[in-house]
Length: 166
Image (cartoon, rainbow, N blue to C red; front, side):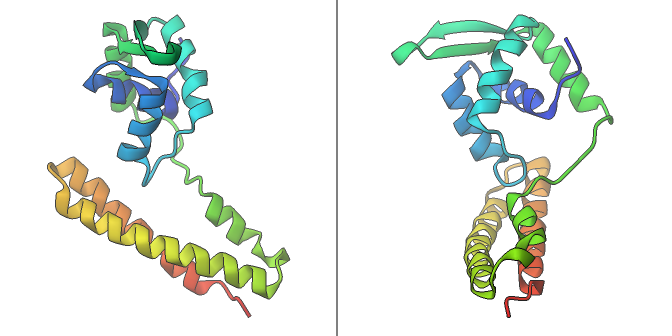
């Protein structure tokens, strides 16, 4: 098996809680990692067979509408712990909004104003949600990530405030 990518590692981490289908993994990733790491449905369904073929997952029970559970194996647990312990790999922010803002010069002033005002409203809501997550944090790691999310949401609002909308 090649070195785990971040998406594969995220799936292995989620499966530590028990068997899940692809759809359940997509939902769990959005809930647990959504504020800082996106996992798309296509990524999940592309990675699951690769992880199973490598012996890091095994097929579990079949569910409704031919859904397939995946179960973490002992080699999968070892691979995940190895990935967690490693320091290799880049740590890039991948934000469609930042990409849009970087290219917003081609928009009309009205389009740019709409982009910024819509994103600002979203990020104010995200900031409220992040503050709630800080209050609900149950351990030091979850709290640290929640605090980071609050700081990130504030930074995005600062970026949006710096975009000229003429």
